[in-house]
Structures are given as C-alpha cells and as structure tokens.
Length: 495
Image (cartoon, rainbow, N blue to C red; front, top):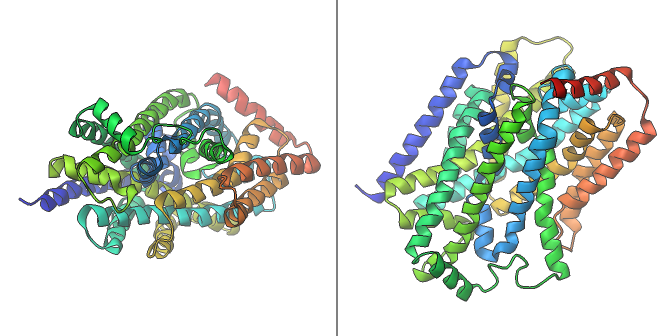
C-alpha cells in the first residue's frame, strides 16, 4: 500500500468522525438558542478545549512554527503575549460575562449583549458590531481556507483550490447542521489531536537529529540568533517594537467573539475557574511544542538537505518525513483540526450576527424557532461562500491574515467588553465610538504605518480612551443598568 493511500485513509477516518459528531449534535439541538449557544450547557472541559481549539486555528501548527523556523525565538513573544492574555481573559472576563449576559435579558450574542447592557434604543450598537463581525470574520474565515489549500498543496502535492474546497465543504457539513454544540464538541476532539501532534512531531524530530544536545548545537551553528529572545540585536528600537507587537497579541483575547461566546455558553460562572486551568495548560503545552518544532526543524531540514519552499509547512514536512504514513496522516489530520475548529466557530458567530442581531433586530414580527434555525444554516453557507471568493487567490501569509483579523476584533470589541463588565458609566455612545475608532485605526495603521508596530496596540489604546471620554460626556444614570451591574456581582458571589 502506497504512502498516499495511508494518508487518505487517516483523513477519511477523521472526516467521518467529525461529521458523525456533527450529526449527533444536530439530533440534540433544539431551537434557535440551542443552535447558537448550546442552551448554556457547556461543562468546563468542553468550554476550555473548545475555546482553545477555536482560538488557535491553522496558525498554531503552520503560521507560528513557520515564523519560529524563519526568525527564531523573537517570534515567541507572540506566544508569551497570548498566554498572558488567555489567562487574564479566563480570570477577568469569563465568569463576569457569563453572569452578565444572563442577567441582561439573556443575551446570546456579543452584539445583543452590548445593546441590552447599555440600553441602546437606536439599534446602532447591534448593527455596527454585526458589520464589524462580518467584515473581520470574512478575512478570518478566509485565512482558514487559505491554510486548508496550503495544507493540501504540501501534504498531497495537490491543487490549492481543491484542498481549499474540501476543507470548506467538510467544515460546512458539520457546522451547518450541528450548530454551536457540533462546533464545540468537534473542537474538543480537534484540540486533543492538536496537542498530541505538537508533542509527537518535535520529539520525533529531536530523536532524528541525534538528541536535544545535537539539535541545539546544529541550530546554534546554522542560526546563531535563533535562541535569542531579542533576535541577536539587543534592545534596539526595532527589537522593542517587535517585542511590544508580540505581547500586544494578548490584548486581542478580550474582543474575540468566537472565544468569548464560549464563556457565555458555560453552565454557570463558577465553571470558569476549572476551565481556566484546563484551557491555559492546554495552551502552554501546545505553544512549547510549536516553538520546539520550529527550532528543531532548522536542524532537521539542514541535516537532510531538504528544500523547504514554505516555512509555514515545516510541521507537515517533519510529520511526513519521520513517521509511518498512517501516523503521519493522523498528524496531518490534526493540522486540519486546527484549521477547521476555528473555521466552524467563526461561521457560527457570523450566522448569529446575521440572524440574531440583524434579522431579528430589524424585523418587527417575531419569527418562529424553525425559521431562525433555517436562516442560521443559510447564513453559515453564505458567509463561507464570500470567504471562499476571498481565498481563491491568497494575497498574504496565514499568520498575516489571522493577525489583521485578530487586531480588528481586539481593538473594536476588547475595550468595550472590559469596560461594560467593570465600569458602570460606560454608555452606548462611548461603546459605539470605541468600536468605530478601534476598527478604523486597525485599517489606517495597517495601510500607513512605517514602524512595524502591530496595529492592535495603538488601536486598542485609542479605542479604550475614546470609550471613556465619550461615556463621561454622555453619561446619564440609569437605574436598570445600575441594578443589573449590582445583580451580576451578587450572582458571581453566590455561584
């Protein structure tokens, strides 16, 4: 049996399992809230692994190892920033958002939470936040499709377009019908596959080059600055900007709709503590594996005289070179898992923005639950088609696409979510101004910046300041808002 056949068998097994999980979720999903939020019934381990898997995407196994392979540990500041950000997100945002979204008219989406929390009668908050979600998720989903196409090019030497379409169709199959529960349950499987792959591949590569000592020696000879967190340049202006940009990735966590919606879906606020321990531990182990894979890849590629055309395929190349084809196929399936877990989560959030926040927000008559679920599935399909058009001819790296979308959400929603949870005086006008300024700054900074500073950092800071200033100018005490703020704090103490 040829190596390619083994690879196809492994992928077929993976595809069959996740479609089966999606079918089981479909049978358990009842009504619109069940489709969009799984009835707020996720246990801590599901919420943790689902948040982690939907967060990391293809850049964890392709984008970041490629960056480490090419530039060394100076790219590791992204992992450090994300780990700190994830911990703070679980600690500060998760329990309070879970409580507040229930208290504030049982909000089931981020835009509906903004409107209900701030008593926005103009509907502008819902509409603007939904537009931001659709714009940046079109780019984010597109990055997943690009990763799928690159994956098939590297793993099977097949056409980019065919690979992109296969990943898209299979992800749609379980997302359209399984909804949020299907996405979350497949995320658990995918999260486990990802962390195993990121442990097995680096260990196999280290053994292949002669052990840890030999690997370190080879990398040090070939790329003397790869083990230097400052890139061998010391604390120059460029290095400081690079470090600040890497750490700034952590700020993005507070505003990612596909991650914070997992907080909203937990059974109760107190589950956040256990979920935090599971989620952050999973993330740390995954990052360690990612970084080692990128570094030891330098030694293995040189020792075996391999021509690596695309650094973002280093984990794929190592898996195929070092393992039995069936095992390598399962590792490759883990790469697909990283891509598809984020892809599916983003489709669900886009669908909820269109159905819950745009359609229901503008329609006077309340539609039936069946109609809402059908519309939700149709919107999943529609968003995927738009993203596919953007991904047909990729014009950026996987990490570049993810980084821009991550910055957009982090700057537009992060300051608003934090202030809405911890500051009584945030107003609808302050939130609206922050979202517009945050999103616009990301586009403007990306287009005109010459410093190399990650656009999330200036956009987040500026949006935060604008939110506070605009809120202080427009603040009027509202007894209902005050009562909900107090009730949320009480709910956290009781539960």
